Length: 116
Length: 113
Image 1 (cartoon, chains in turn red, yellow):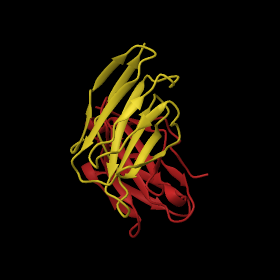
Image 2: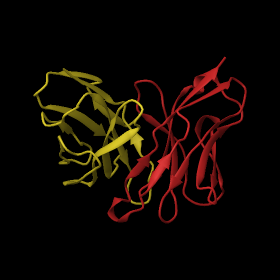
Image 3: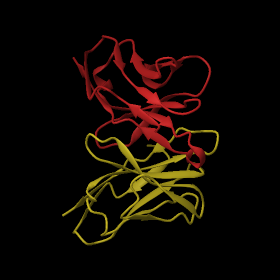
Image 4: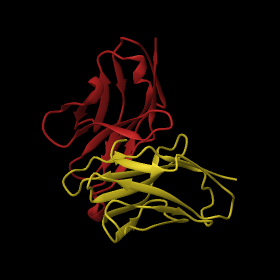
């Protein structure tokens, strides 16, 4: 079965330090991967995606993600965290099964807390 | 949230009543989706529609119904058959076959008592 795992419910980091939010996936075929961010009582905002090409993908708000095929991972990173980065982050993968290719499978989310 | 509107932001209903959540997009996207979000469970897909007049059940369609009569509109009805309707409901859209990222509306928080 295709799935996405975000192994950490919460990540705590001090402002100015680098941050990593982990994501691993399991899909058939080539993975199409996404990161979204959600602020309280708001919809999800698209951050970045990996479809093909360079394993390091750059996205919005200074975030980037590294695709690692051998480890089936797509970790979200930022060199220097801001307090305003505190939010809920979701990793997602495209459902590659037959007619479902419009669907995304979402992880359970990781709450990022950046301390001043 | 730009381009996708959901109304109302908060909705309160009594048990046993059907309720319809609105979702409109002006992005000219072909595909639209409804998700349910519960604390600690991420997003679960209720229904999706790839084109007008066509829609498919998602992972948790029981107790819900949808229609897609216009490209820009994808309303969701939460029926009295839905056992635990209290949740945060998110509508999304995507451009089509070769563009996969979905864009989300601001959500509707439904409380049923």
